[in-house]
Image 1 (cartoon, one colour):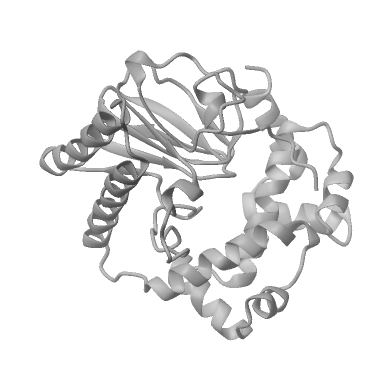
Image 2 (spheres, rainbow, N blue to C red):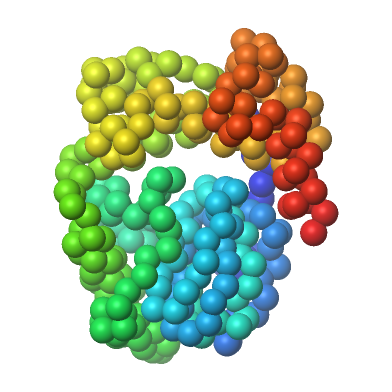
Length: 294
């Protein structure tokens, strides 16, 4: 299935598209406007830190307010638009999965972080001034190392690990019951396979078999992680793609239903309305006016 959005790597965000860099840290007041489409996808993770000012981020039709003393996380393959960044005091940290996992034997380390690669988590995490001061101290150490002539990627990576571990500890304190790391890893493995096959409209059993677990266990993982069943998670992914195609392409509703392997356009329309409370045509009209004419 051809993606309708451009994918950008870190080099594009420093206006060096041929630069294969896997890590960068930039302050908003020194940042040059990147030459990227309004709506786009990243091949990397991004952490926005905000010390002062307010702005908005849009990720897959969800609008979020960016506030002071907060971090905002954007994961690969999310459709993203940054409304305003110039009025903000703070900056952005960009890193690839390979950079984070550099020299690490545990390749599931990123999956253990509940706030990354998670459609169901709020990507904006707010801190008290005291807690945010600790976060800023780590960011300043990352900046200082990145700006050295003899900078060491291993040292930068170590600071990044500590930063993300601090964020996870903050999140775990807010939750009444923590999701087990085993379930979190399995859910994100499920999501990885889902990204490869969602357009085929496969059943939950198909994914359970791919993961070598029972369908019952897959349901348990999804319920524990997102409070949705595996089937609801599958359908939500199909509807998200339908929303993207309705908004950003000129494809007809029948063409989209066929592309996402629904049995027919009427069943697609019924399913879409059950999820969104709107018909596909009403959604297409509303979102095209909102996002494609600006």
